[in-house]
Length: 223
Length: 35
Image (cartoon, rainbow over all chains, first blue to last red; front, side):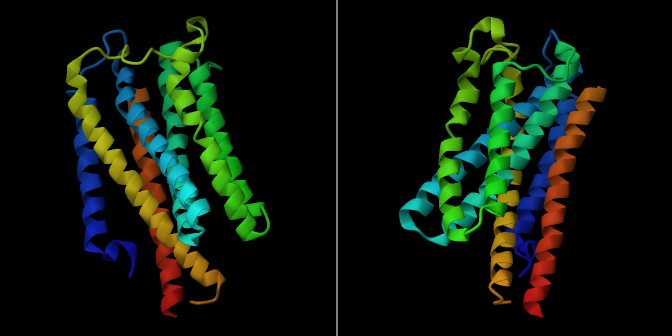
């Protein structure tokens, strides 16, 4: 049965479309702006939830990888791979929206400061993860190596989050945690965007997982 | 406004394209299964 033939998946997707419309309307019209920036400051409403959603994707890569190494059941490996793909899609969007905001704010698309650099490292680690999956050789061995890499890669997530505190302030370009917006009015828009992107990452994960299972069956010539 | 619109379009556009591509791929694999 196709993915969108299921009523639940269809409802998720339609809810995602509805929330996207509401969210874009809120960001463009009534969401409070940062006083120091023009409307480009509202990119924050997208950039931060996308980053959190990517980190949640990577958290699940770690959890599923641990479960795979522990239980040795292939299904956990498929879950880990689908989470890694959904997480990396969102990480790519973080690295896309960040420079779009940075250009008007800092005058440059990219600055080699701690948070940007550690985010890029995480993205590159997962590109390596996919290359390992694709070209690693023996599938059983590759699944084990990929699980270990998925667990180790997650160490970078708290480093990204704490990077504004871990490195000297002179090296930072990013605002400190909680300094960007001091207005409590940002929460409704931010929460809608968190919910929306969580929904979209779940849809991306579920459909990708289904594609993996179908591909696996095809490889085994079962279908 | 141009920067904000670019960010919105790139995020939602990329996600929708991704879902669309996966749905097509899934449909293709599902058709093979039926054959």
